[in-house]
Length: 491
Image 1 (cartoon, rainbow, N blue to C red):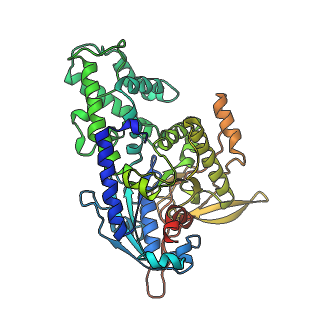
Image 2: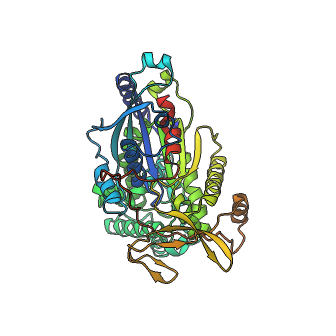
Image 3: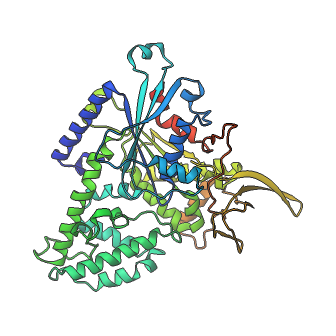
């Protein structure tokens, strides 16, 4: 985050927090891993599967410390931040493994510490390292990350950008009621609590409509309007963009002055504490996205996902930390953007999903003019809910995926009961994603997106050992993600 977005006092507090973390890390080496996701991309499932596979000896051939046998023990330990809710791993894994249902999404920040005992691959490191690494997993909603750019915008800029975006594409229909109310409101009129509340409610309804499964749009700040928590009904969440009055300081006591004050309160009460207490203390970050859902929803959802990625990546400053520089301020030196639900495609399309996601990330990086060093892209499935097969149809052999659709899931006019398996042809992604983006950028009418089948499958039924112990959760490339995110810290 550029220094201009924080005050001198904020910088001093961040430096103090980092100094405390680093001092503690000399005794107990620790890495803080941020996990966030955009619009139902599977944060809870990712964390649960990662921890379950580490604790239960999962198949992790690309995670070198485990594959080489250098990890001797893995255990959960009390987290260091007592004021942060614990990530309820046990409840989530019970839902996945025993009940075969997807766990509820987290709606606030949570944390979990997992510690690995290991033997360094370097004899020199074995002399100076305790052979122990704690990974503090910090789980937070993607909406909170999309709030960080607000720190660099005043209320006028926020209003202008939000109103302009609301008038484009499908948003114009979804925002119709709120925009009509806003256009009819005189920002220079006297402040009125009833009007402020009605505008905030209409604005929140517009944001929720954008996020719905039917639309799957991603750029939706302020994030707490979607996840208000204990701030629901507070003045800090009772504001909305307004049509800006002429340049100059707003008249005291006007509706504009009231909304401007509440917008600044939102940044002070909600955004800055998250940045200082959590985001600024992260070492590594994974951002999960549901690119398949965006493709399935159409060109506008894809463009909005790219816009959200641009805002997200602008929050990071990937780059190497020196010991002395990290005492006062940290860089998130590795960022992984992972397209989830790779198990919804045949493996022949996994590289295409990764290529499409990589192009999304590259375009976002180009727009904000940053280097791509320290940013990696992968296609993963935190929990593999399907297996692959082939079927013959009209003399052709088609690759399909086989799984158990969720209860009441409808496919081709057939409704499933949550117990019966079925085979689905998942569709193909384009070999060259650039052609797709060229078409989107040209503004051509009726841009054709590849048809992919987005079916909600139940979590898999796990096999058991002879002793009746269930095996670890199956996945796709979770081990590769682990190697990138913290494998180097176990070298």
